Each structure stands twice: as structure tokens, then as C-alpha cells.
Amino acid sequence: MSAGTRRARRSGRTPARRLASAAVVAALCVGLTAASGAAQPQRSAAGITVYAAASLTQAFPVIAPGNTYSFAGSNTLEAQIANGAPADVFASANTSIPAAMYAQGLIEKPVDFTRNTLVIVVPKSNPAGIHSIYDLTKPGVSIDIANSAVPVGSYTLQVWNQMGLTSALMPNVVSQETDVTTVLSKIASNQADAGFVYSTDAETVPTQVTVIPVPAWAQPKVVYAMAVVTKSPNQAAAQAFVNQVLSASGQAVMRKFGFLPLTAPVPAIAAVKPLQTKRGGTVTLTGTNFSGTTSVTIAGVAAMFKVVSSGKIVLTVPPKAKSGAITVTNPNGNAISIKKITIGA
Image (cartoon, rainbow, N blue to C red; front, side, top):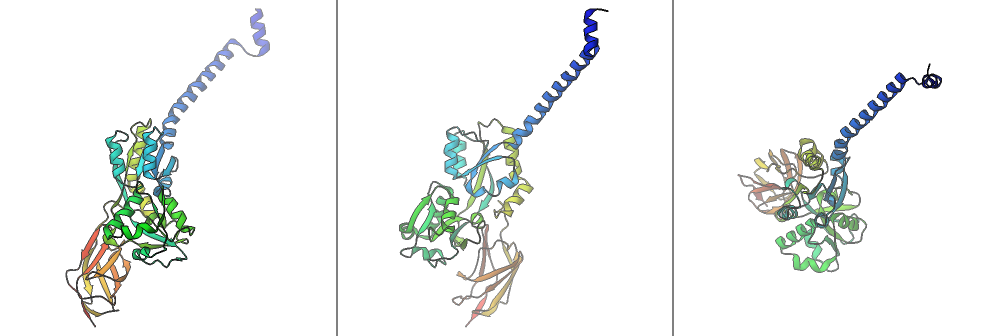
């Protein structure tokens, strides 16, 4: 017996055992390497970085909770991406910023993915007694808005211009913020009498603010668009997230947080009963797609109404109403009754 064999037996490690141990170690190494390689795409898919408009703060993490998110004003995020920020997906609260970024080669072709509406919010105590947009023209009223470079600020100015109120409202503006979240926060904490935000943001603090609708005829078209960032190292995962937001489940989450589908149906009026009534009386409308109704008018005069279901509305004839057609409006369009209602004294 050689000295080497005697040493191997004393240590309990024969040449055969050494070979077996080496094989096990090699197998483990191969297994770990394979596992690491298989896990990498999963980590990339779950770990993309999404730069998104502040109004999407609640919805996006529910759609894909594993991602890293940066929420801010769309214009701020645009500047960061242009300066090389490591974003994989960009989601804006308008379509003009993504269109400009696409033209510059910063993002792939953008796609529209949801809609929103603009509303006025006042503190729950409403110290200035604001009940309509026209009350904001009163001397001493303080208004907080986002600056015009931010989509919500741009939409706000669109409404003012559409209604011919810019010159009357601008002197009452006390601050112009960098995003919609800051506007909402200041109104909720009574730092201003009123502000303009998205309806989805207002819904997050129902006990702190009161919502006053923007007249339907002056409501801007608030459409959101998103795209994969051109320099993203995770193109497939980024596109998968875009697809997820556009999917039925993703859109269901968006609706849960108050966002509107891109192709929501326009209302239609099938019947009006009764066709003859008095001021202060009630009228029942039957039809389709009444959910989301923002206003009901009789010959152009706004009426108080209640949406009973998607196919039924009950309205109260206003004191100043005149005989004429009834119009039902939602963010997608109008429905005008074929038959006119006759209003007596």
C-alpha cells in the first residue's frame, strides 16, 4: 500500500470520493448559474422604472406593484428623460408632450391609454363660499393652479379661455405649482380658496375637499399617452407594462380610480316623460349610457338631476326653464331629445 493511499484512507477521502464530491460541486455551480440566468429576465420585468404623471400615483402601482415609479409633473419628467434619467416607460397626462418627445427620438411611438376630467376643488369648509367657477372672480378669492407647462395647468387655462374668464381669474391666482398633487394638497390644507385638479385626484381626499364641476361645454379633452423610452435597456419588459395598462385588467384598475376609458359611449335619449310639466316638476328620461353624465339642460338651462342607472335619469325642472329640447351631456358627447318638453307656469 502506498503512502498516498494510506493518507487517503485515514482522511476518509478516497480518489473515488474526491471525484464524486467534485461532480456534486460542479452540478451545484451549473444549477446556480442556470437559476441566476432564469431569474434575470423576471427581475427586469418586475423592476422597470416608470416615469409617470403625478395623477397616476394611485393607479399604476396597483396595476404593476413590482415596478419602480417616479411621479411628478409630466414636463418635469420630460426634462429628466431628456437629460438621461434611467426611465423605461414615460406616461404623460397629455398627448402633446409625448408627441414632442417622439419627434426628438426620446421615446417610441406613444399610445393613448386613458382620459380624465378637470374639476374645481375647495376646502371642505369652503370659507370663500365658492359654488361655481364664476364665484372665483370675486375680489379677494385666492386660486391655486399648476403652471402652464404642466398638463393640468394647461387644461386649466384652456377652460378659462373657453369661458372668457382669464382676465377676471388671473389676478386671483396666488400660486402656480409644479404638479397637480401640490395643488390638491394646498386646497386640502386651506392654503387657498380654490384650485383646479383632475377628478381622480379629488376623489383621493373626499373628506378634505368639495368638488365643483367645470361646465361640461367648457371641459377640455384630457387624454393621457405613454411610450417606451428609446434608450431603455429593458425594452421587452417596458412594452409588457404598456400592454398591461392597455389590457382589460389594467383598464379596469384605471376605472376603479376614476379614470375614463378612451372610447366611452355617448348618451342617447329614448323617451321623455311627461312631455308637459311645470317648473319644479320632475321629468324622467330613459335611454342608454347615462352613467358619467355631467349635465342635463332644458333649452340650455341647467337642471338638477340624478342618474338612477345607466338607462334612467330623473331631473327637476329649474325655475327659469323654458320649453324646448332636453340635452344630456357626458365627457364623450351630447344626447338631445327628439321631442321637446312643454313647460307651463
